[in-house]
Length: 632
Image (cartoon, rainbow, N blue to C red; front, side, top):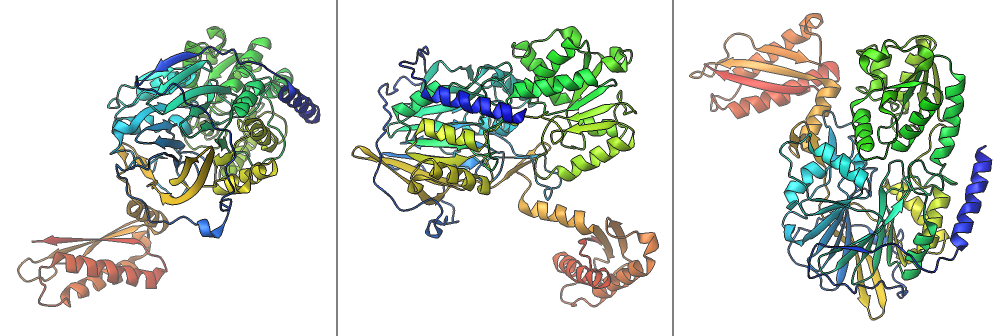
């Protein structure tokens, strides 16, 4: 079946590319945010002279010395920078700057790595922007996923709360998220669609191109500047039969390319995967077979943001006379928002309440929730571990993992599947059947986008560095000059300027600040690398508190020191080590220099260093030693 689908989509793509559309009849609805806008910005489609090879040359290694943010600017130079998303998947935020005017594209978060204990998520560093609030002319959001909107409540108040532009679905999700942050600013949101054109400042005119993804209302951003046209694709795939969305408009994409694209910034998340991305409608066909064949309860785990998938599951439930029990806070919230604004269409009676759930027969029940990545606190893990209030696993259940494994989550998913099967249920995942379609373009779709846009310069974005390099290779294969492909790091400045009729581009050595800003509970940016180091140390080897009571007049120790161990050793089973440590501390205080009888810092440092070394010699572990000196 997959081969048939691939052949059909290839033919459709070729037909769409060859189709001649004489004129784009989209309505021009001008939304002028700044009255001094230049209405005559034109794209430049000329090829510049060959430059130094900036594709992957050692001499272009970035100078790691950060360039301090200043109010100066380079006249006539267009600067493009990413505050995140060029060395990771997530934390997406890009800046386009020209002569004291800046527009921002996306404000996303990134979830922490395993070596960041206690961190909720990471957001972009806005140090470069904080003395340039009056430069910022607007914020444009490509779509409603958290890696593109998650940092909005934290960043917008810090940069002066400029006007924001986004699709209707995205606006609903952003407004819902704002309610969770009572102290966040009231956002100035303007909803847009593919027909809108807006002017931001004197130098930027912005258009929107609807693209397909795994959530409705996704847009590529087309920015016309005095230097040329920049296209930022956002997350996209090419889907000719999407669910609850319009199909990819390759004719419009080709028209944009014919008008001239100076720089294409393109999604690289699936750049290492060959072929074409599957259509969401294909997933519905496979799911339909499962709904027809499975006799017991169907439990489905997927991403809360996969609203096209959710719509298909609702349609199938109605078709096969089943009811849906919706679970997971993010899943419930997203479904409510999408239904309120009309992007999810279903009869509300399809959804079960807690009381109704208990009375529905197993063969009529579909339980839909989050947790297909094995997340500890998600719905699916709670069910499997017996921690859910209403749902428990039983023999005859079929658990469907309707998502692919995110790198790094494979082990958690395997453990979850093991636990499911041990309890007598069955599991089905995307490797067994076509029950998941990714939201990102694969290699053939990426090459098609480049061919249609015909950019003079190319910049892969939104992925790890090896994925950016893979995308750069694809661009080179379809004809982009290798000297005009910029594989940048976070914060690295790309400059474009006009020289006569040509546009000259360069990947500079300048780098603006992009260090992680970590969010931990209500704290934003107050957890540093030193704090993380301490947390990692405590997680690895634990801690031991040494409490010494000292006579303030003589400096002698009073009694024996008290020791408290957490995560290091079990004290009742290690009495000899505990007593040896006490005696070591006692002797240390007694033998300290007589010239410093009341120097607390000296004594604390000595206890920390000497006891740390003593415990390492005894155990080959390095617990965190916390000395406490009490004067009486």
